[in-house]
Structure formats: structure tokens, C-alpha cells
Length: 171
Image (cartoon, rainbow, N blue to C red):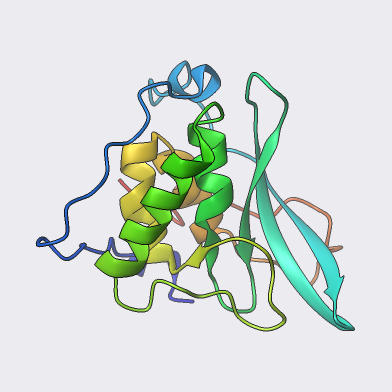
């Protein structure tokens, strides 16, 4: 994973038309898009899958139906676009989510970054997640998640440091 100040935003292949995103955006994220709020709290957890420990970073996002956690694998840096989409568009149909996932797979090189052990959902590189975050109204949240670094001197469930300097590469 590159240092936070070197985060870049991917660019999709222009010849592949993107499906229309749902119009009903999560009202809890649109109400906090004024730029004055603090970066969201990033938490860490260890998940055991197939006998292997996988450390995840997560950000809790309120939705009308209950919280959704946007996830990042710390071993690969990959971010769950499945949880991003659910957080941004909680009332969207499965068909809309599948159409978006298919477009992502066709539009970005190396879009599938699920890693081993396999975790459910569709995972993308941080640069792809940052591109998608703009259309999902999640830029600040995804930037904080992509920039978070687990401090090995802290207990794994404590909040990481996310400083303004760490967010320098995010817009």
C-alpha cells in the first residue's frame, strides 16, 4: 500500500459506458458533505478465515436501515466496493449493484483484489475505490480508510492516527 500522500485516483476505460447510479443517496452521508466534519473514525478488527488471520480496517456509515461498515483489507490494501455501494445507496436493487460491479470489472485493470483467504464481495484497489467514492458521495470516508495505518504499538482494536498530513493526497 503506498503512503497516503501518494494515493492516486484510477481512471476507467472511456469506451465502456457506465450504468446510471441510483438517485436515492444515503441521506446520512449527504447531510455531512459540507466539508466541515472531522475525518471518520477508522477501526481495526482481526477476522479469522480458513485458519488465517486477516486484519480489516472499517468505517461505520449510518444508513436508514442500520449501519454498514466499509471495509479495507490491510494485507492487500483492497477496499470492498460491495460495502461502499451499500453504504451509498442502501435502497438500490441487487441488479443495480451487479451492473455497477460488472462495469467496474470491465473498466479498470486489476479491479478484482479479493486476496487470500477469499472474503465475500467485490474488492478493488484503493485508487479505484477513490474514483468510485466521488460518485458514491463517500470521498472523505474512503480517503480516511485508504490512508489509515495500523500502529503496531497499539492494541489492534484502537483507533489509528489519521492526521491532516496523512490525507494530503485526498481531495
